[in-house]
Amino acid sequence: DILSAIKYPVALAPNPVVGYMTKPALVAEICRKYSQVVAVNFAGLDDDGYFIELRSLINREMAYNVPLGGTPNTLALGANGIIGGEFNIIPKTFRRYLDAYESGKYDQAALVYADLKMFSRYVSPWSPAYPRWIKMAMKVLKLPGGEGGPREPYRMPSEDEVKKFTHGLLKLRIPEIDEYARRAGLAIPS
Figure 1 (tube, one colour):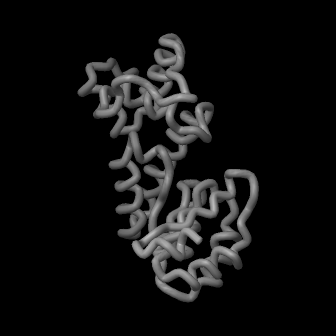
Figure 2: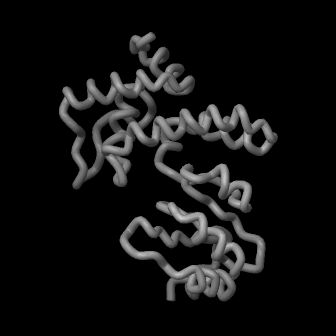
């Protein structure tokens, strides 16, 4: 019903992370039936086989956006981009990763991928909901949007938890985070 009423470009998000896996054949059928579907966002995808099957069933040009995990494979298999909440804090690091990968500098891409995975793993205790860790990072790094806190039902963690978060975040030694920390006047551990 919704896609029949919408005439502008949209992306589908099967989102297996919400508890069930939409069958690739159903997603492909929707993509074939509605030409305004121009992308598929694979949030929560941890199965390359799902991505491979869906791509084989869709026989037209589409954008395929995947989560960071497994991108060395999914990019090689035809994914076009990466999705995830981490972009809110370290977009330049993601850009460096894609630029290195796309230019065939796989050794550099691997190093940046490792930084991205360390960051993702570090914030994982506050996932799959992103608002708390994103707001903590914005606040401590003095990034736009860091004022106030997350909307209900989320709440900003205690000051003690924010301090612990900050200490661990700075210990990651990711160049983009270090750059923000210097601008925010934070002492970066050596």
